[in-house]
Image (cartoon, rainbow, N blue to C red; front, side, top):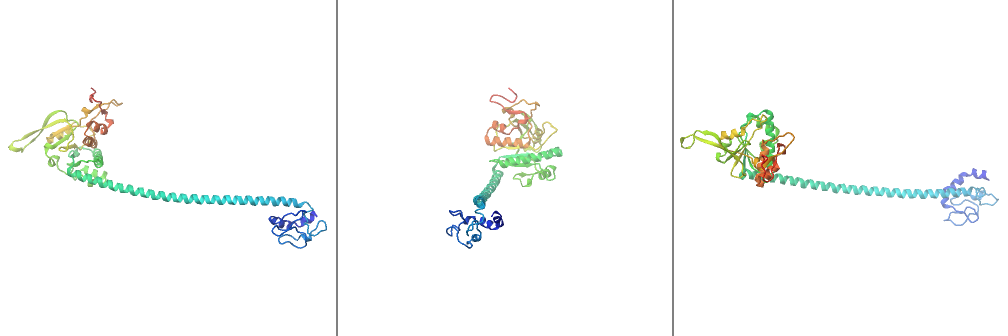
Length: 371
């Protein structure tokens, strides 16, 4: 019978494939599908199963050939395993579907977030652009107002022929920084560049190094500062201007037909006021020639003044024992600007005087000489 059952493994496979449609009866015989009624005892072929009537282990029709051969329990275990496998497959399928749904939801959320961020960034950029335009418009308005009623600061460039190419380039960079400080100021000064010839190396270097130099909101002229301003309103800033008087120039055609001698008044600058024209010597001197700016003031016969460094600062010890009061043009301008806005030389010098020069603001009651 076992051999018989093996010969009909094909039918057994068909039964296994229909395991979810068959069940055992009370007597151990295979029954119909649960949807179709009771056990199979009659002849013929079931609706979905093998022809049980042609196999018989005990001479009775309807008994499957593997019932008496011990094959049925093995097939039952196989059916159970297959059902469990189907349940596992269903569970994995549901898990995979949930995973796909979660991924789709995450992608949708990420897309929405990127869209919101993009709109936000575009809005911020638009606001920044608007603010930048407004800031530029405000700067132009302040500079236009300064050209009408601002405090006058003049840079005397008549000594540019004394400089080397390297010094000329450094002065061009200092003029750019000076103009930048003036643009950023809440109350900018009215700037003048005097003695700047059209064919000079300095002008060519300023145009080369500084974008838009010819469009700077300032006055440029080849004339001397005394051709633009009255001498009595001019103060020429020089670090060599000490207290007292020094000889000035002779003016041949003075009123009354007599030659008049001007004396150069030397003093420390006490305050920054709007009625004075402050002239800065436009010169970079790496060879450290003495008193060039003071000599220019004497030549012009105007008052020469120095910044009140000795009155508000003192020397500080450093590794190189270096102490200098010689400042770049833009540094002097920054100190003037800060003193004008704050009304305090102490605050202006503390903010703008370079620490590398070996000076610091003195405590109250101390002088730069170390007293």
